Length: 160
Length: 200
Image (tube, rainbow over all chains, first blue to last red):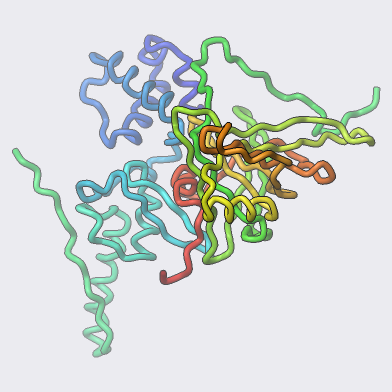
């Protein structure tokens, strides 16, 4: 099912169908980065909000691929409208910060190592750094000269 | 009855009864020298799915090359893309792509640009306000139609039309630009499809 097909259905149809509701929540999380609390009680508002976003900004190309495409990273403040680019097989791949996916962020970091643009690194990239840290301990034990410099995993301090 | 080829079969309809339509192009065009496009990178996608048909193309420029953007007043309507369908003498469908744009000024720079447009073989990209990026003239290129450049009667500028040559029209309608996996067509359009040199 595509977002277009979902918004062809009424809010009542979506709320009364578990699969449709699940798809709606996935789409909402992909667009806004969070699942709305009590999605049922204020559903009409969230429905109109997401539908307006999809219809007025089709260039965002909202699609649901799988849970791996949900954002696990946070860009630095002010970089939502910045264009990011990396080259893969001699082909430039570009996107804007506000529609960047996890897959793009991981590849971007692997190629450019631009960690300074992120307050929180993507989960799968951070896991990769942790693996490298284990390797560096092993290398140290084997008395190799090369060491891997690890960037500390940045955590965002949430105000209570 | 004879069996028709698959390209001659209609497989889907369109319901526009309740749609809110976008009606215009952004008043910008990116013109690319056709020789700057890497022909080996061009990938067409006409596959149809259960939900929608496809009519897209991917391509990249040679390293170090980029397109050039022409921008008009956003309140105007000088920039637009169109396609005219016709049949060849042998019954083959062909399309003449036309890119409408505006060029202003009587100074040296404007003259140099116009002279280059007249001699060049170009591919044009336009962006519709729904975000779709269309590519015109990808197969055989576009060149300027005959014109009269009169900046006085044109209010300081003159419309310029780039179109497919009569002898070499296109086989396809203007194709929809598809970015690289994970990329964004809007970002590529805004960057003039530049392929920066590695390490730049």
